[in-house]
Length: 120
Image: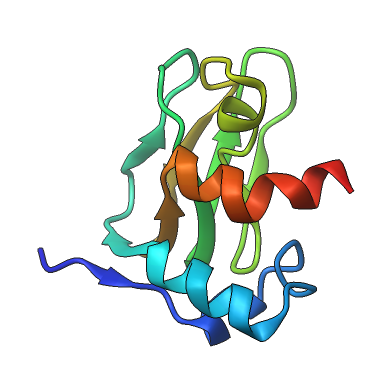
């Protein structure tokens, strides 16, 4: 499957990132890997050692963990921020319910562009 990057326009729809300057959003977009994911795919699993950060561009996903109620993610939502921000294993399992398009980045990109948004 060919890999492509997300666009600034797609990332702008995510509330968390909407305040980033256009130039910064453009740089982040180039670092974000865009992928199409089939329904029923486990994207992250609770307890796994993985530190990618994800933004939902299209579709719906279910979030389940051992401590809280199940919730839904829709376009503009994000997930996977706890593991890279805190340096801990995954705190939830996220599964696609419909065909989804996700954008994700590695820990270094998260630290540079996204993590500061949580500390402000």
